Image: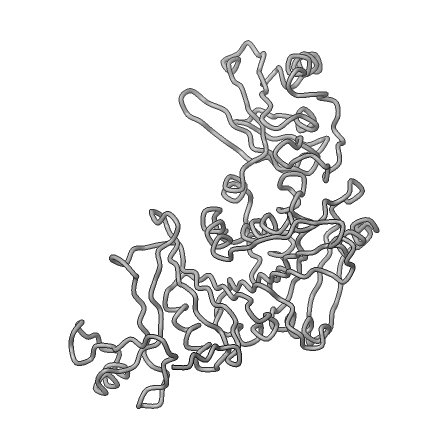
Length: 433
């Protein structure tokens, strides 16, 4: 037993010992949305906390369940009560005063980093790991206008909106919310995480399920003042519920208010929202992370503003090729900016060249039909088109694809990201000679 953590006397001695840097250890009920920086926030009810300790020469770590007054977390069959953690400063040290073999055991408790939280939190689906999610957010190049008295007076709803189709584990959702959080006014102390609310979209009809009693008037009022928001949609209601609860348990739910969660088909969601805006585009960024991603592009592109961005994240480069064919074949008005491979050993991603190509020799049609391989430099070599959109080939099909790394050999990675920007043909500059 960790005797020093299980008896009242040791607990009081522990609080006195750490009072000079931990503050009042009995203050357990500070608000989830305080005005202090997130880095300095205390461990609070509902948080998942990272426990780190050594057993011999081995370093171990474990993520707790959301903290509760009557909860506890086992460390090698020895329970640590959550009540000893609630109200303490992050990175607090717990000392065991037991005289048994565990007497030298010390445990550090702190808020997890995004990487640790994503890796150690319970999951229903494979997450987008923090390093990948950070690269994706960096590619989007999001810049926020800080709140001011002038722009805070606006009540017409958010001007910067992101749609993430495929919530999954919620790891990318969390990174996106962190990226836009500074654009919104700070939540007041009266705002508390609402009870789980499930919103579905079926055949253009909005159906709300669940108990809404936990959604406070203060939260509703604050939501009207948001200047940026992340809409995240998942076809599986269980994924949506899991991500909602998980994000609420990260750092006092600091980023949860900046997200709206939905369960349903993203095609129906986009159609419903477009109907409410009288078919006016309203999205600045769309992120698609789901199977058969190319089937959804045409359904959401109408909701993207001119100059907005579409990003897809897929495990195979051939799926990027399918997206390129879908966009060019249907003239969706999207310009491919870059294709990046993400994976272990690739620091910030590796660029790929993915494009349609014209045939240098019509004999390639035979290879295209048969799926045969050809050697570089042969008569079947592709003539890559630069500076203009490729046209359909002589055989009446979409031209074959070029998919190759910009530099070096192909390596195994964690996935591929493609980024498009929406443009209008009428906006193209005409340069006179």
